[in-house]
Length: 379
Ligand SMILES: [Zn+2]
Image (cartoon, rainbow, N blue to C red; front, top):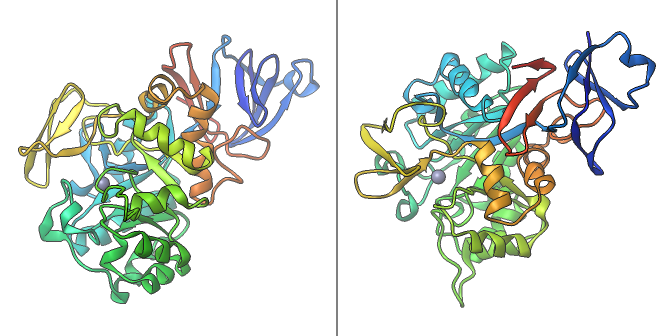
């Protein structure tokens, strides 16, 4: 079936384009054409009403949504509920994210994502395993009883997923550069986080295949005059990606603006680090036995420690515009094209381009989500 999306402002490789029609053929984008193109004649026409059509958002760090925490019950139905909650906010691709837990839960999480991928569940791109190979001193809300060192016995578990992407967040100082290389060789995208790694430890990990940094600035040793540390390495290295939480609470916007001056914008990606509260009417949730309160949009445990976010991707995009001063084109790319590139999926996701999967989000002038498509199917 062919669909013609007409009368939209489309984000393409050359910026925002008006007066063109986007043709979808089945699950794929077919072409961007003149409205008079003969192929439009027999297509199902959808009038976009002059609104913004953007590549569907891709979120590489989603702990939960719709009242569901992935750790609690890692099965395909949990993943479906989380995906449905986030889709309302423009997310058309995501990695269900496990925070530090026991190995059995990690195994069940991978199996649940595998079953979801095999069943073609909309939006599921893989899994993010955040911990438990983290630094105790920077554990944040992660339960210290689960934290452990990473050794070769776990490579086969962590590289088990087929047909999707696996991101593993680890503290480089809790393992060796050789382990980073082994994971990378097994297809795992290794990201550094919850870490006090020195600059030397971090650059050694980068040289061995470290691909990114998890929620830059949060749960990391600080930039110091005589020890640039993990943050210094993340900002100085030109090639690695940085996930950033732009909710106005986790990181001062000035810090994020400084980061954006340090390296190419296409090495930053908006993440939500969302908790079950997103897409839910509740104001509390339970995280591994602890009650987390959400006050003024901030999730905190009983000690006041930040416990993920109540952020959705559409809000992250709006915040990137209002707090970081980015234009909508760059903000949207940080939520689509750049995470797609981080995942190695840039040739089929993250852009409005012929041959790409028809994953799209329609936003109004207030940057509120009006409609989404995943593989050509609207919701
Ligand atoms: Zn974290």
